Length: 385
Ligand SMILES: *Cc1c(COP(=O)(O)O)cnc(C)c1O
Picture 1 (cartoon, rainbow, N blue to C red):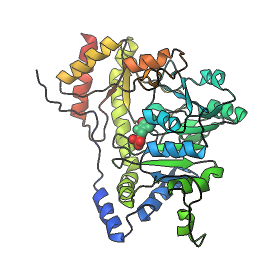
Picture 2 (cartoon, rainbow, N blue to C red; picture 1 turned 30 degrees about the vertical axis):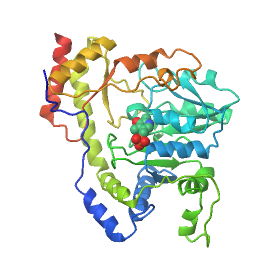
Picture 3 (cartoon, rainbow, N blue to C red; picture 1 turned 90 degrees about the horizontal axis):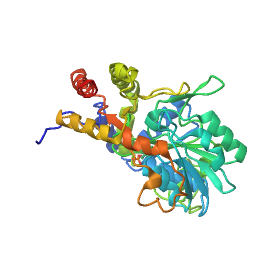
């Protein structure tokens, strides 16, 4: 039977101001990178989240690649990262010749198991790359302590973590992306705030600030030249073209202006799912997201964890038959065709289990209450039957 999917998994939300700002960007006559809207976006992030220095990029993938260049990752260096993540987290370092050392997920959530990192650190370890899955903070105090002790760098993959926070042992709530030496955000259309494609590198360690500008501008000191700090610019380092057109920044700025509204709506949807499934969790039929006490919730994603792969497959089918698109997520990178022979052979059972059992439900600004109720009813019926 062919069913019409009436509730998509994701629907990019437009605030309505995007085209207005794009028009302004075009009219301004400067539509290459680092124009008026790029500056507005940088200022927004620096003011709202206290990030030291922000640089828009064309994607989070690019921001991660910049981070790998900035850290001087060389062939043979080791980088510690979760196996349950998007390929870009890994690729950025593979491109520089690094060997990946994959960490298993926590038992209760897909984030990397911080307790197992210490045993993986060697003299070759250059960086730890925590991924804040679903915008849920990794235990950054523990990660930063390890990194400082061994003098290695931390790059936060904060692709999903805009407007998400970590409360440290000192009781202070810090935005994710402000804690590691470097952090990368994504504005891909599947993220809370988006510009179709887009990303940002956050530089929290000032030693990287100048070089980050150079790497982003094809290895030239053009940024300093445009600020009038030098009278001619030239090729001073390796680099590439990582900066987005101001047209993209104009789109992004419209979204940023609506950040509070977007987040409020997404949290309502998240909370409604959580409340509706509480009885299933109470009777141990379904596992709901479990947020560590130090993590805030930015409502990037609503996921559930089924008891088995078979159960998840059946649930996806039940939803599909009701016209609802729900999707699983990452396949373990340590078992991927590209990396399985390079992986050191350790079993990562929790990663595999999230790979098999985690299911993401539709989650987008315009998901209305009637549609959400339909989704919830299908799932309740599936488990109550
Ligand atoms: C989306 C995402 C990326 C990649 O972002 P792009 O902007 O599409 O390059 C990287 N890491 C994680 C964890 C992501 O969710």
